[in-house]
Image (cartoon, rainbow, N blue to C red; front, top):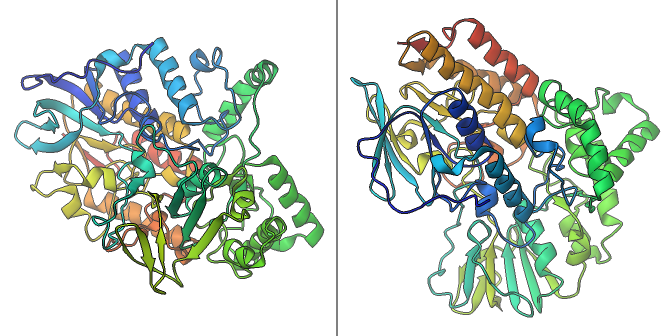
Length: 546
């Protein structure tokens, strides 16, 4: 069944809904599904062409989830009992197939408007109603707005001089054009984050020449990808009830595995090495999110993890100069304080003679030319294709790109220019009846997406249900609650090591953006306790109801 609905322009000028959901990824789909079943009138707007959110948009070669597929799905038996995964780590095509499967079960698209970007949202204080304007010029009125726009939506394009002069193909991984050819061509990839690692693995084996412009080496972990048989899927389904129960109630990041409670600094070299090796062989994010509990808090513990990682990586890089660039003797930042990528054959590809690494901290990009890129050492390299794997304006970018105006007429961009305060990572004072899912100051970066869609999503649904049952028409967080939430995040950040890295976790990947920790660092169990406290107060601890 298609995951796309009628996308012809529709007039919603007089329509009034209980809830408008913005975004058709895991969080948006979960809201539409459950709110509709509870009798709310709901419509979902999605800027892309169908269900899937980032997995409908991200179609660059090699794009795949870096969470085990057993975790990267909804936990409801209705779905997993008949869904077979073909790989341990599904790619973007299989994720779109999964959303098509959800559509076949839930008939979601009848209440979706695709290719319809929300460009503005204005709150009428006297009526207590939001008016949303979409890209086709239509307006829609609603009591509540749920922004499920995600974290990785608005691509970041560095302002390189001369890009308009370049006559070759320039593309960002987030907006990959169908049919782009790179085999046998001279290709540049700028950036070695997750999308860069995945692209390099695809391009390197077939390009005539691949030049990788690297600012910071990626401390990538082995994926241990494998195909799954019918028997594998049967075995997985037998374990799903226990797997999902643990994922949704016990673990820090909402995965089926968790940190080891032991401290690395208290173990013998042999004990540490044995456990590191176990995580390495199991693959995925385990060396990071199932590592020792003190890894992200103690410099010595962190250095143990880095030394193990460095030893593993340097052993498979034959060129000493490349080894120094890819796995330097001194860590470029504490291990795990930037998003770890997963690799299949990344280092083998980087070993190839047709792959050059340009360290842009030492040799910056000076400008684009008509034929390629000139670096600060005066050298000009010629390229047929340049790939920007430069990431996103994470956390807030998708929200500040919309003209969202609250009770005082300020946009979210204006409110957040000097810092973000978002109570429970979901609400902010001055914007009543508006909720963010998987957004700033939520567990997003340190939380499995589908787990967050369910756990945080249920709390939002409970809040809206409470409003209806008790005759309330307006909720809003208080300034004190917003600021206290930021203070809780800052207190954890003060004792953690993440502040020693420039990353999208703390907004330092975007020039000029206010630097602050934009992730909730307390883990899902603590996060859910905070929501429970709010719920048990009748939503009066940090909210004002009207």
